[in-house]
Amino acid sequence: MEPFRLTIAEAAAAIAKNELAPAALAESVFTRIEAIDGKVGAYITVKAKDLAMEQAGRLLTGGQSDRPLYGVPMAIKDNMCIKGVRTTCASKILEKFIPPYDSTVTNKLDEAGYILTGKTNLDEFAMGSSTENSGYFTTKNPWDLSRAPGGSSGGSAAAVAADMCIAAIGSDTGGSIRQPASFCGVVGLKPTYGLVSRFGLVAFASSLDQIGPITKTVEDAAIVLSVIAGGDHKDSTSAHTDIPNYAASLTGDLKGMKIGIPQEYFIDGMDKEVETVVRAAIAEMEKLGAEVVSIKLPHTAYAVAAYYIIATSEASSNLARYDGVKYGLRVSGSDLIDTYKETRARGFGQEVKRRIMLGTYALSSGYYDAYYKKAQQVRTLIKRDFDEAFKLVDVIATPTSPTTAFKIGEKTDDPLQMYLSDIFTISVNLAGVPAISIPCGFDSANLPIGLQLIGRHFNEAAILQAGHAYERHAGWYKRRPSI
Ligand code: GLN
Image (cartoon, rainbow, N blue to C red; front, side, top):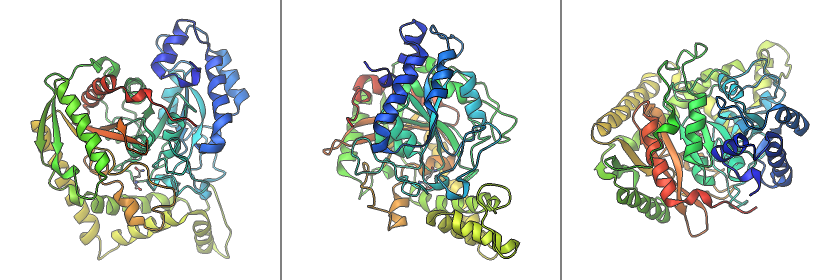
């Protein structure tokens, strides 16, 4: 098998057994990027191959047992800072921004021995569901190049699906890890809010943003999560809890696990093929010994509305820092105010401007109570729905997205349609609970379908265990796109 096709677990084992040199693995992955990224467009910046080869060449064959990502080439979404590496957020306003520091996540990956392949495409500032809002170009779905890879971490998901990295890191504010993972037929995990430090992640909506892995298998997600999780004094919202060895929770067993099926997630208007395939996956889990229970999440219908008030309000505040003075692009005007205006008018794309305006409006005096405060109250109700449900079940299973990958251009003229594609992922961020998307089958056009498993706060182990047991049994992860 070509080394670029390996999972993290397989690559690490091959390196440890002296069967694969880190340099040979890097060579294989970078050659793959050269061969196909012209078609897919997953990367905004590819690391210079000679630098990567030099770095890999210094690593020993045989690995280092305390460094689980030793020699593993991984891609990072281009909204996380790496010292000296351009970080654009797919925005013109940060086109030339070179951060002087590392994010905590990439520091931890470094300590674990990873090799950076490059920075992947996204919707500008992670605002979108398709990468079509990138200020540079749209990434193509490796399963069908006329379709969107999902978003906003579309570049990371496409890079993993097309074997242009062994694994990748994404960020998820309303579904941006899980929905592209679902569209691209790979695994995407959004950890509990606070489990992974966001230091060095460019902020979109601070009460929702989380960083997580996009991988070929559930086992790989567990390996990466163990590396990146943990409290950090540089992120005051990070939780200082003990981090288990998540890979140890992959027992392959589902016996006695209670899985809840929320009726609100099987709605009119969702793709029938998605519903059939997801229901079949749940039936398989039942055969493996899980107990399936019908549950209610009654406030689900309000999640999209609450999210688009809260996320845009926080974004309007977070993005105030791009003023032409402190970071990136500066377009000089006749005076300071004019400079702010010119810089922001030229630097931000349409969707980012739309959200800044929406958020500023929602926070403005006279409207605050009607919109922002109301949305926060709804958020509390949504969180309580999950608290109640988790008194009855260990894990909740839903589709990740109501459809498979849509055509590029299909929803760009209708922002509301685009927002609705996040209907099954957003509640999870509002509640702060963890969720994973895993491949559970294909539609008749050979497009992947994702199963979402949601867990209690800080119980990543349960969704990893359930996802892994299903994945090994079903075997969808073995199917790869041909490009
Ligand atoms: N698609 C959602 C949005 O546009 C979620 C994005 C994200 O998770 N970063 O806001």
